[in-house]
Length: 80
Image (cartoon, rainbow, N blue to C red; front, side, top):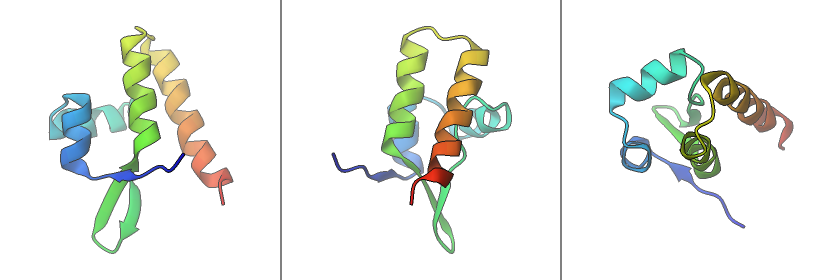
């Protein structure tokens, strides 16, 4: 399966969150940080956004979502 990067408008559309809500949730540890894909560009791996949405649909607690975010961001560093 091929994954792709989602730019900000796509993330907003997939999550239903506003720009400020996405950044607030990143600060709260409830949404993964974007990945730098260029000097002035950042994006999110699509599977990470999908995983967060699935956790929300499954009514996971904020603590469970924080744990998921940590797992997703840690997995980035271990994937080369």
